[in-house]
Amino acid sequence: MKSKQIILCSLLASLTLTPFVGVADVVDDSHMEWWREARYGMFIHWGLYSVAGGEWKGKDYGKEQGGASAEWLMNSAKIPGAAYRETLAPKFNPTEFDAAMWVSVAKESGMKYIVITSKHHDGFCLFDTDATDYNVMDATPFKRDVIKELSEECAKQGLKFGVYYSQFKDWYHRSRGRGNPGTLTNDEYLALVEKNLDELLSNYGEMAVLWFDVGGSNVIEADAQGARVRELQPNAVICSRLYSRKVPKEEQKYADFESLPDRMLPARRMTDDTETCMTMRHNWGYDRSDDAWKSEKDIIEFLALCAARGVNLLLNVGPTPEGTLLPEETERLKAVGKWMEVNGESIYGTDYSPVDYDFWWGAMTRKNKTVYLHVLEWKPEGITFNGIIGKPAKAYFLADAERKALPVQYDGNGCITTIEVPAKMPDSRDTVIAVEYDSAVKTDPAAKGTYHWYTTRSKRHTEIRSSRNAGQQALPQAVKGARH
Ligand code: GLC
Image (cartoon, helix red, strand yellow):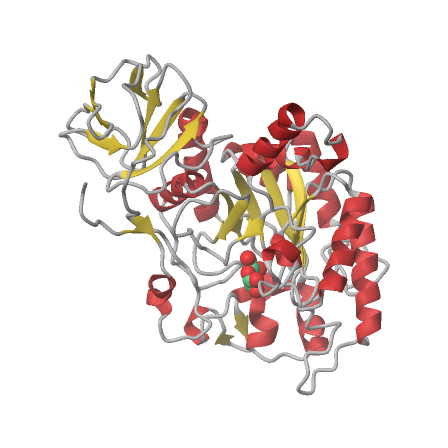
């Protein structure tokens, strides 16, 4: 994980100030460019657990029963590997699966990449593999390589494609202790991971993201896996979950970006490459009874706040056992897409907020000479911000095709800018005001402010407070503090 600015500085330094530094000394992170530009991607949790939909023997193991997410069923219901496989694999026959449809929905939502669970903690492989027969081709009646179909479709429709891979936790193949021996010895398991990775990295064209999940404490093992990715797909972007969170950042040699804890909006802007993943309801995997849907406003707000903190958003869908996306998912994704059609400029390729705080009304992103105000709360008296030096050349609603100038006042004493706005909020989800300057945006070094929009761990547990594992399902709570 490298700081965007540090890299730029060291690049400039090496090119100008220290001409003797060889090219090899300059960190080459060109493989990160598309990822930084993308800002918004689709996460897909799909596997045998989808067939169960959070239930086992008539009992709901979703949020009502302890809060673990539906894809954790094998663990939550303490199901032995063989019973899990025998019950669910013969039923995995999602004949309505249509890769073209899924990819087009992601595209319509404005997403630039897709990451799907090729193997989750239940050990089941959603792709054709020679390493185990516990895979979609050999163990299910479906016999279609989901990873192949999706990767080909992404290439066709111009989206980047990547896989989630649970490299450490595997409740089927690897021993889980307490009378759950697993089908393989530890060495055999590591060989399976090696083989799986070789297959994923060799058989599916460009692999843009390797989204490892939950690294163990063995750094040598993780480094070897990271090195293999670099060797076979030098441009793949590697998730920090290749390593355990306990491994210090500077030792996470192959991590390209930091994956925040699930559903987290960081407390302040992040200057290193960072991503957060978020569910549209409680569960990641398909759950029959989970109706805690986030609204389209919730999702758009979260996307905007992520961008303002310099964080990519990987938004999850949990397709059905039949192979479809739920109408609730498609509806919301398309609504975000409509918003992105007019406001995408304020998200794609933007940088984190130019000031290290946000505002009672929302937050800022920035690109070159423009600051984008993501206004989530309206005030007819005007939208005011401090911290940027100079009077803007022009301000306008990004959704206004005519880009009609909004009146602007600027008070050099404290660098306070006020944009006059109409009484009614044009888009109650997030009204974006583009504020253009004559030259690159300059931050007032004396600027002060606080963060108003955040999620906290305790807040993220409020809905299912009774459980230790509970959900972390959260939305940014609008905490309206003192205005400044
Ligand atoms: C956690 C969970 C897992 C989920 C993932 C998504 O690691 O174990 O079920 O896939 O987060 O980020």
